[in-house]
Image 1 (cartoon, one colour):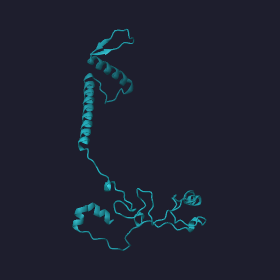
Image 2 (cartoon, one colour; image 1 turned 120 degrees about the vertical axis):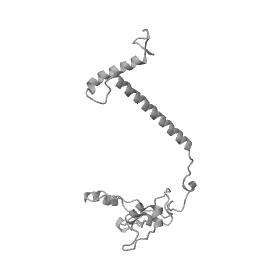
Image 3 (cartoon, rainbow, N blue to C red; image 1 turned 90 degrees about the vertical axis):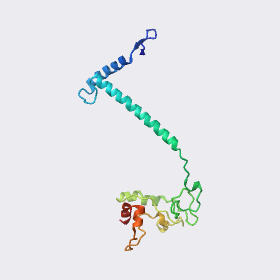
Image 4 (cartoon, helix red, strand yellow; image 1 turned 135 degrees about the vertical axis):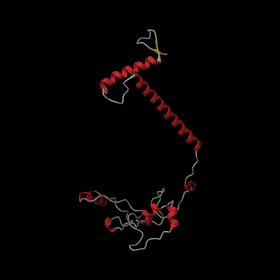
Length: 201
């Protein structure tokens, strides 16, 4: 039984059973469906269909909550403590963390000692590589990093900084006509046949 409160605080409270409340909700739902979806095959039409749908929703909510609690328990049981790469030891050799190659893509913003820092491009170079290229129908590009030098000279007179070999994009490392690397059955077993096919393309 559940209390039903009247419109006034001085009115007496009326107790209504859960079944009566459920039937009242079904009656309101049926009246609404007459105007909203009178011919929909997915809404319950009878009292039995209504109870069946309500039971399914309750069971689904229970299963979802149970699944959520099981996931929380699984994460808590796992609770693995992971260490950062190289035990968070800072690497000051200006090389990549994986292949130990010289690159500009490093966590530190400090440039390599043997590599000069390129100055910020001027407005003329920015326009030439940006808006002027767009007017000509070409794609816009960021200006290339250039060797620092005489700032009074035209920017085209300053040579671009030579990129590290690891930072070159789109240029093949193997020379044209160079024979492909032989692969034996052991290599196929270790890396997989599908990966070997992709590497040979």
